[in-house]
Amino acid sequence: MAKIVVLGAGIAGHTAAAFLRKKLSKQHEVVVVTPNSYYQWIPSNIWVGVGRMTVDQVRFKLAPLYKRWGIDFRQARAVSIHPEGDSGAERPFVIIEYTTDDKKGTTDRIDYDFLVNATGPKLNFEAIEGLGPGKNTVSVCSYDHAAHAWGQLQLSLAKMEKGEKQRFVIGTGHPTATCQGAAFEYILNVAFEIRKRKLDHLAEITWLTNEYELGDFGMGGAYIKRGGYITSTRVFAESFLGENNIKWIKRAGVKKVEPGLIHYETLDGEEKQIGFDFSMLIPGFAGVGLKAYDKAGADISTALFAPSGLMKVDANYTSKPFEEWSASDWPETYQSPAYKNIYAPGIAFAPPHAISKPMTSKNGTAIFPSPPRTGMPSGVMGKIVAENIINEVKTGKQEFKHKASMGRMGAACIVSAGYGMRSGAAATMTVHPIVPDWEKYPEYGRDIKYTMGEAGLAGHWMKWFMHYMFLHKAKGYPFWWLLPE
Image: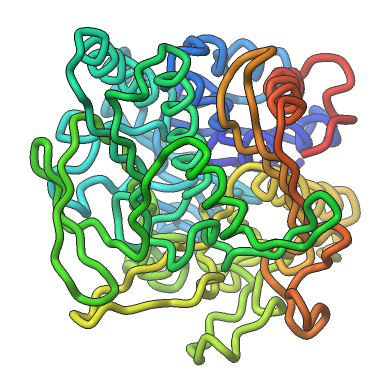
């Protein structure tokens, strides 16, 4: 009998748990530990943030589903990993701290045969003074943040309806933040809502980003096939913002946020400010703060985790110049090199290097996007980790028949530009592979046959359909396993 513990129930963790439970007999135990009682479909949070969906349309309770599936669900946060056990136990275990009202603060230990660390990121708002909900900006990184953002946005819309001009600043709130795509979708949806209310003459909207060029999205930008022509994602992004009367500030790293005022530094080393009435800025990501200890109780966190707190996996972490990094440096199995029964799919793994070229200001501040690992890639990673564990449990051999490197994996993204069955819009974009492979594709870094983009109403219908399709999959409805990650 094998016992698999999954930490986290986001896209990677929930996908891994679903396949583990489906393909392993009930004599094997699957445990999911996550601090939240809900699963949330994060890509639709931007629609919650503009009032087009409710919170309950993007989330559902995990406990009833896991009970039906036969998964041991613990609503708790993981505190520490003990991969060698301790003086009182030979088996490895994790320490968890419950987050439910009846057990809040109490701890427990869960032993395991396999551990899947899919804890995702810590939303590192505190890295920037004044950033985040409860301070001076809003967020759409979680359903509750998005609901709060909609409440604040309504205040600005109400002021505009009374004839008062409003300044909107949306983008990245840390010099090395990732998830530009989510912020980009949100600014386009905010502009759409303002225009739909015929209030655009009272709005000044600015895109504030750490990208060197627009359309970088943390993946070094891309060349895409569009309407029979090959163009860059820079042109793609600039045209979207231009069509929506959105100004932009690029190559900017936010340093501090005061009420109504954002302080940022440019790559040129200039210290600047921009005022706002409403601002949504994506924070930087870090590890959730997990610690690791050996059998004697000594701290071995540095053996498992990178300085960011994200877990080291089967990637090449050798320090070398950006020009020498390659697609082959990226992990394939997401296995910890320190302990062979530990895995880290999704955002929980430490990238070996940036995909976008690292840039440093004249003052020494790093200003460039970190690599994205959300959505489709996270689901694929969660599935292949589960498949490899399933194979090992069934055969007793660690064979790694399933691999998923971002240097070979493609991804599809639908960038919403406004919600409406007849008036909505979205840009549908695919890239292959996610990490450019300049050796295999010397001209563009990617296979141009599978790297393309188109915009229009049909894209909105597709994103709307995918919202329901992926929730159908996540809820374990009939034939969920046939739907793609």
